[in-house]
Image (cartoon, rainbow, N blue to C red; front, side, top):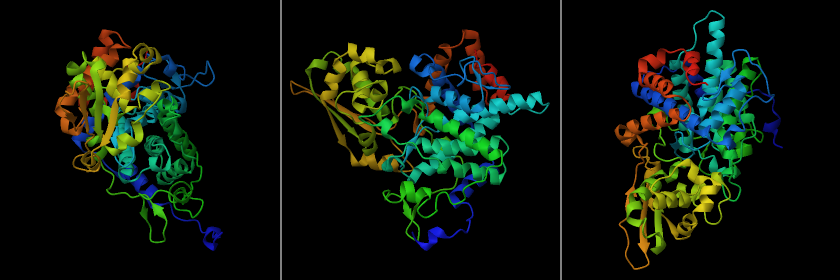
Length: 494
């Protein structure tokens, strides 16, 4: 062990942590676009959670750890009658939001779903709003929720721009935990030292492995992992608020820090410090960029790298639906990230395996003209052998331009192209979709469809009058922002 490791000079907090803390505590959100997109994001995220309540594999996870537990001013889980402590409520909200892989997405060197942070944000805000009213204080308003969402999106997304956690086998929910920790600590009233302490502990935690997202171990943990991470952020914020000391050199400590233990020795994507230790590369300051550019999953409950493939398959459906058994080959031209993450051959073990397989997500809409969550289930798969027949005929090809423009800041395309070849020598034209319906470049086209998605999801849980009341409030930016959080959540519970 080198002499440097033995020195006991306690350092200042790592600059990465200080930058996050200063952003959360001092930045003023003034962007009307960011607030408008955050409002739409709130609608969409809640709707995804309501839809997931139709699936018993999801709902079996919900509720208090000890049955019958009563929590004063407990946070509510939308679409249910549950009232839980904020930590478990964050877990449950995050679980239902992520279950169907239908909420928003951010794609960069790392990818993820920034609205996963709503689990912690809404649980903490609902609890605190109720508590404040009981104490004769002003409640938190939904404006505070929207601002916390914007900041959580920004923290998660900016770190993800140039830092790939997946290349060293770590799951992107690490960034959910970090972002939830920061914004939930702020909602709780943390000062700078408390916020830094909480953030440091988020990195000290042993981080989740990605193995449950990949063959041959893909499974349903990926559907609750983000809820777990957001919940942990709430817990760490609470620990820090109780006065727990932080770990200032959590990232940079030689041998024992995050960089040396979990990153530096294998991650060549990271920038080198002068002394040779790799560190995060942060290419821009925190602001409102991520929320303004976030990707919505509007048409399909599918892993985002396949969204444009699904759209292309729907376009091809009328040309191939009566000739499925005449198909010789299906060529899917895609980008490198899609190949690395969701290209799979062989047997698919469960619904979670299928919704992360580009071949499956292309075969279903090609054969049936649409893709819905129920089509990932075992019964549907077993009843339609044509899906696996089509998968076996698929060839995956990388287009270097698709890969390059996926990462270009002024494009961030998620391109896929499909062409079908038949046994008689004929073929369809190649259908290319470079930007999915949920992309910023297609906002005008996408938002009305996102609103339709929200209304449909509301209708799975509430009577018509309540649906209209919730939707009308969510459409009115000023009225929604001014609504007390606990009053807003009142509309969302049963």
